[in-house]
Image 1 (cartoon, rainbow, N blue to C red):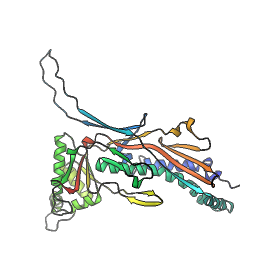
Image 2 (tube, rainbow, N blue to C red):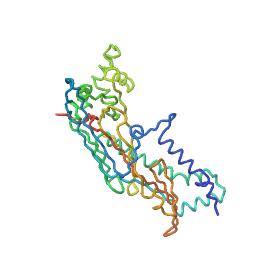
Image 3 (cartoon, rainbow, N blue to C red):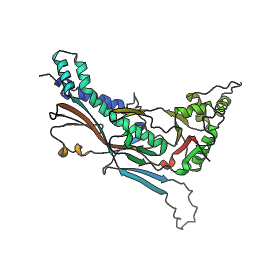
Image 4 (cartoon, rainbow, N blue to C red):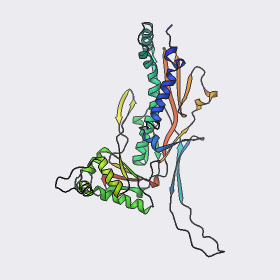
Length: 363
């Protein structure tokens, strides 16, 4: 009988692989995570299994000056709106079929290097654990760049979902001239957004955008001339500034920096893999803070020991992911690994987020 023990959880390798994967995903002080949603969202547990996006129309007024021994005037409370819904479930599973299991047996029996077998047995759980933050990141970036997180049926085997984060219509802008035109004036467009934020008593600290939008902006005559002026550059051949150079200029003049988003992901449906880029093309997102919401999660039914199948091995990973392993012998021999999670990225106070679409001319 092949000795699987040294290559499975009993030997500690699966636990080690899981922990290393979680550490890589979540990041440490020495190694920050490369997921925006883990950097910009705070993990929150939902007892009732619902997500909530709370938007507050904040206004600040001065205190009234009143005479001694007189009542204080009653101020009007800020308007509060709540978008909410059930936290959806996400999941994925892989299987080692009879042929693959036979091949592994053969490698063990013939003394093939153990690391090869170990990698085969441990690769599926690691890929499963990574699949959840990949989906969360895609949902978050799509939602952050549009105000709506929409997962269509055509890119998801299961149920389509729609999350409305409550972005205000008056905080959405177009441009006077498309930025693909070097004669456009992107910083005039940006100033209109900043003026609206100032009127709302909000301070913009970060602007996130895709690489094409940044490149188009940097190539415009206005951007070149503003940067050249800030550097006391004299000459007709004005250079195109880099990201770091633009950020030095905007940080000093406006108090914010740009961050370019370049993420892409793959989904699989009916055996076909397709690459998608969730960030809306041409979108600039103006933020008053980097912490924009919560990563809200809830317990799965199978996390309750009373609901667990005794023939299945369970492992809770990073609080909200449930890794399961089981085997079948009918209709054919196979070993399965799956991951499930009830988790969703939620953007709070979308009323303080501003959008500029550099691909749409605003009338």
